[in-house]
Image 1: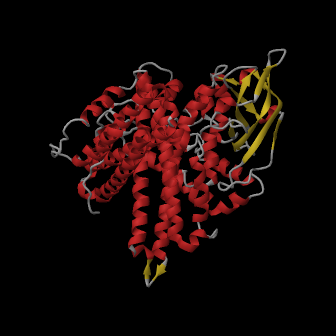
Image 2: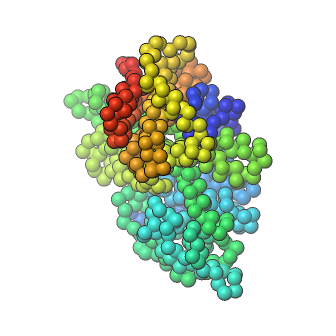
Length: 580
């Protein structure tokens, strides 16, 4: 289902140099009844099967309970939502699979096990496997008969994934690879039947991926890791000692493993961004309920302005992040449809569609994980003393949230990636960035236009603010690129601040466009709360952009150049404040 204006589909990163209309984006209110029912099935499963047993899951002495929950999820079809129907799945489009990830996102350790199995454990075979591999493994993974794990990280190989030391050597008869090496932080390792393992064949420079069945032998593990949070998630070190893997279980091409890892991580990032929305909503709901029940000074604490402010901020940030997630998810679906229409193979089209929006995937992962951290922190505060007690739900929510800023590439890596990918695409001519940056450079030297925006429509003034936020990013990106040229990638302080500016611009724009489109559907009177949420977020985003911009400018510019750029930044972050 494509509800956006397909004629106006854009490329990844183009939001920075194009004016986006509300008709071009998808909003979650447009999910149809069938999609909403699928999401409700997930929510009901968490409510009836997972939430009543969270303590059991976290403190179980073995993985039997988690396996039981995964089996039940498989019976409901929750493990095969994205798998094509011919392999036992439901063949849902990308944005629907995002909705499923959100609906399951409030399940704490169970959500981690589920996402690892359906994402990084299954998708490499779905997208890169040959027909024989897909037919053999995907039906078992879709039903939950088999559980999957993903073995990439090693003790000396984290963010630098291609530096892994696990080796694969072809046997003398040429029928098997012999695997030797160590992997760590492997989610689902304790109960997985199948492992996606990355290793280097002989002295290759790049990784190759293998499908390794547990029954192949030569696989041993350390005890379960003791972790800060997600305690019920199985996390173990895995050792491969002369593990014999048939040559037909090599996945994709030799030295193609790093490509698999990168593209699967893109999917994992945006799916994580949607999953944390589900977690945010759960914490907000619990906070509202508690604040209505908890009485101090003769009234419910929900009547106090400080508590109202906290809940409003939690809601506004979550609303904005949600808006951006499904906007990007539909962009990916649109890109996939375009590639399919051009004759591309289905699996390849899905990979290329996600790859096109790698920038947005990285930004959303950063934003969503940091919003969840904000939400759970405020949730603890609303609960007060009970928030610090393990008897109340905020203890688990607080601890479980923290891993998301590390999962799927640290937020620091993803910040570097989002800006770095935009720059690379600009250098290749895939993104027409430099002419836009040069135009902004000329504009800051011209007499500013203080006239009011002409025309009709909702958010006219706010859309001008968004345009100016984009100009601020282009101004600093253009100037720093011109100064550092090929050494720009080493200027991480500037890149980090540019990433924050980029993220705030994309998220704020997404929230505004969502409300504009929703208003067209329901009318302005019915969307006052959503409008307030979008406006709250926009004003905070402008302040953050201004702060990040100042830090970036003063880290590389000086003299007249610095004064002119700071003056331009001040102009580009001008906004009329309002009373909510």
